[in-house]
Length: 57
Image (cartoon, rainbow, N blue to C red; front, side, top):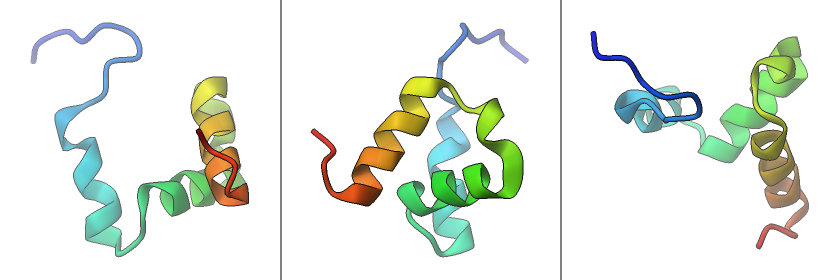
């Protein structure tokens, strides 16, 4: 398996929300509320929090 640089997204990562029937925003929110927020980078958490509030750029 090829090495990926830190922060590089997995190509298949975009398919998981679809398979679960949720949006990427909802998946990130669910992961954070389930106690896995520490596994996400701070800028990612901030982005999805802003999207949930409707203030994302």
